[in-house]
Image (cartoon, rainbow, N blue to C red; front, side, top):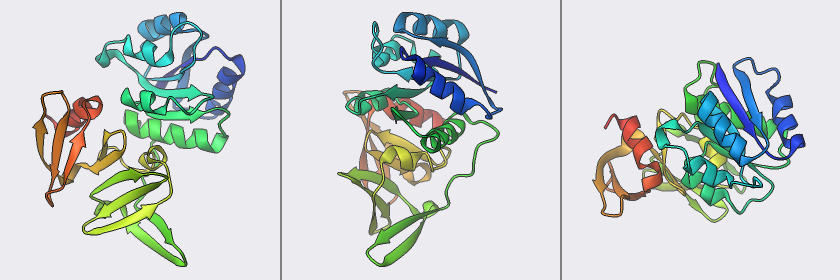
Amino acid sequence: MIRVAIIDDVSLARERVRLYLQGEPDFVIVGEAEDGTSGLALLQGEKPDLAFLDIGLPDIDGVELLAALPEGERPGIIYLTAHDNRAVDAFDLAAIDYLLKPFSRERFARTLARARRYLGAPHEEPASTHLVVKDGSRIDLVPVAAIDYIDAAGHYLCLHVGTHVHLLRMSLTDLQSQLDPRRFARVHRSVIVQIDRIVAIRNLRNDDGELTLRDGTRLNLSRTYADGLRRQLGL
């Protein structure tokens, strides 16, 4: 079972999360809170696996609330907000997802699938094996296993496959929800890499790092994602 906390000062937002969680037998709600102070107490007391957390809480900012918890005691976080200008802050704390209110049931279902994969739940949905890339009248089926890394370029994602680059119009967050977290890792707010392509990690003085891939490509490793990547690599 995935134990869930809901922290939002808007009762309708909490109700929508409760409604969408109905019929999901592997999720159980262990508590709700309507402000940051009681939300922090809820997270410290119940220690849920997952929290739906509003960024714009009236007393404690949702990002600040999560930062107040020791890293090892933080649940998986799905941020809720009516504004899209806090996404960078959210993902700097390695949030699972960022739901912009009002969100649809379909969008919520994709978030749950991503949460299951992130938490290693037994009923996770299969990750995508191919990505559909449209280029005019041409449609390419790009095998996920062939992708070396993915980076963001404006409204597009660049899928790097050897010497080829495919452009896909999708957010990095939505694409990450379709990828197997055992094979892919976010290493920067704008970069996802296939883990088995990494051949070296170099630590930098500012706690960031640099990755070297098999083909010699070098990528920045943000300190926000460094610990998670090292755990995945068993370091």
